[in-house]
Length: 110
Image 1 (cartoon, helix red, strand yellow):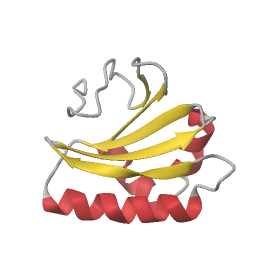
Image 2 (cartoon, helix red, strand yellow; image 1 turned 60 degrees about the vertical axis):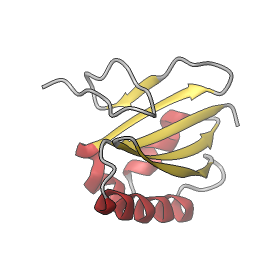
Image 3 (tube, helix red, strand yellow; image 1 turned 90 degrees about the vertical axis):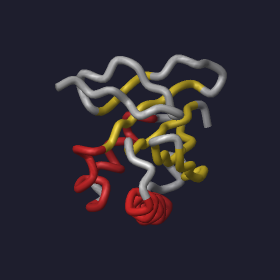
Image 4 (cartoon, one colour; image 1 turned 90 degrees about the horizontal axis):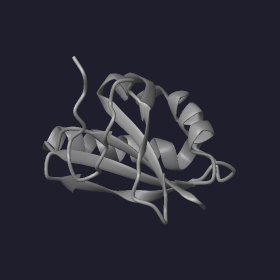
C-alpha cells in the first residue's frame, strides 16, 4: 500500500475514544481489502486518529462515507493522506483545512 489515510477526531476524551473504536470496527468490517486496511489507532494529545493503508485514498474515503457511523461523524472528522515516504499531507475533508498533523487537532476555518 502506497498511502496512509488518517481519520481524525479533534478530541481525546473517553467518549471520543469509544466513538473511535466503534468507527474503527465498522471500517475494518466494511472498507474492503480492495481499498485498503485499517492499521490501528492512536489517542491522546487532543486527537483520536484511525490509520488506514491504501493505494487509493480518494476511493477509500468515498467508501468510508457510505458507512453510517462515519457519515454521522463527518462534521467532526478531518481526513487526510500522505505517501508513506513523504511528510506532506493532502486534506480530503473538510474544505478549508490547509495543514494537517496527526499529532495536533486540525484547525478548521470558521
